[in-house]
Length: 247
Image (cartoon, rainbow, N blue to C red):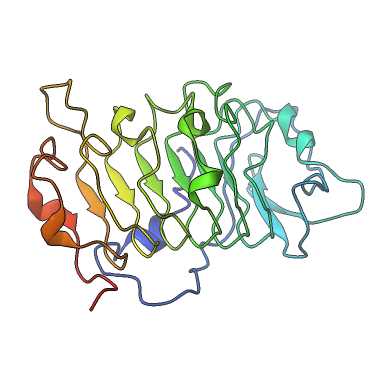
């Protein structure tokens, strides 16, 4: 059987609005590895990692757990030997940007509860077949930390993107180009406006693949949203806009 989905516990009640700044604990990530992948002790390079929270992963045929902690001099690059690695949970590690040199085969990346301010350009560009699940909730992302090339390499593959509980003031660029996206969380940010073509591409006639869109607990004046903003979404009932932080 394949790797367990790292976000399944949190997503069990994902339709309910978030009311707390404390992110849920998703447990250890689960990985599948090639036979030659060693049970190494690893952390994240110092320029990414400043915390003390342990990272755990599961490897090998017997499912033995090996702690990945912030050992001095250790490096995430050690994981690159694991050619079949599909899932990593780096939550609660005080990362301040999305790490580079992630495994090419990665499908699930969980980065909850860090201090991430930036998604570097082309950081997912080398991945094949492409990242499918990216969870960046409860971080410090702002508009300056996300640009059009931040998601380069994942536009065709991302199915779920969680950017809730950050400091975004607008819809990140490139959302309308994500052809496989089913679930998007942008709730609990500082978004004030939703402009036409930020969610839907006016040049395309077909419906969006989006099935769940969360925008609640921002600063959006819902009466001022353009009628074209969600024109590509099949069902408006899949869009959560209320409540907003305005009086």
